Structures are given as C-alpha cells and as structure tokens.
Image (cartoon, rainbow, N blue to C red; front, side, top):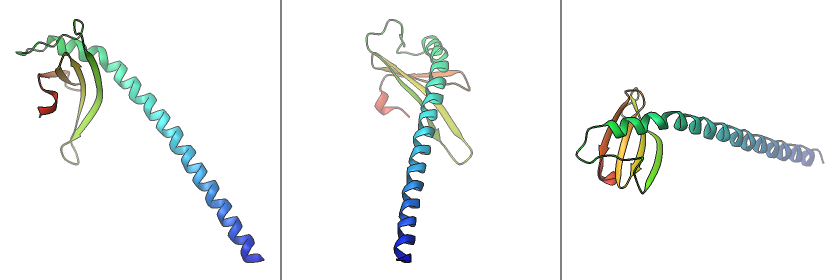
Length: 115
C-alpha cells in the first residue's frame, strides 16, 4: 500500500512538473514573438529606405512593387563569436538584405541563389 501511494505521488509530481514546463515554454515563446515583431517593425522603415537608395543594376522598388513580401529578421553565425543579422525584403522578384547594424543594403535578383 505504501509503495502504491509513493508511486501515485511521483506520477502526480511528474504530471505537475510537465504541465509547469509546458506553460513556461508557451509564455516564453509568446514573449519572444512579441520582441521579434517589435524589432521587425522598428527596422522596417529603415530597411525600405536603404534598399530603395542602394545602387544596383536591378532597382529595388518597394513602394511601386506589385508583389512585395517581408521575409523578416534572420541571422547567419560565421563562428562562435560572429553573428551577422539580416532583414530581408522582396519586391517583384528582387530581394534586398539589409544589415541593421551597418545600415547597409545588398540587392540581388535571384533570392534562391544568393550568397
């Protein structure tokens, strides 16, 4: 009888622990989505302006574009100390990678074959 009570208590504690961890994960992911949306929103205007000013053989026209899309914030980790952030916009098959730290835009015509 004692063994069954101990086993039941362990199962209840395990279930409570799992429920608590799932709840904390859900709350943390919600906060992360909020922060990501804030960062993307604050960078958007700078990215559009820099992309439209950038010199390229293929002009980037966000305001006059017929098909526009925001890919969003992404990053590339070169090594353990270097992470390069990027904010990507696509307008009429022309993509623009904007670096929010350097305030520099790179334009290309084939999104899938970019470096």
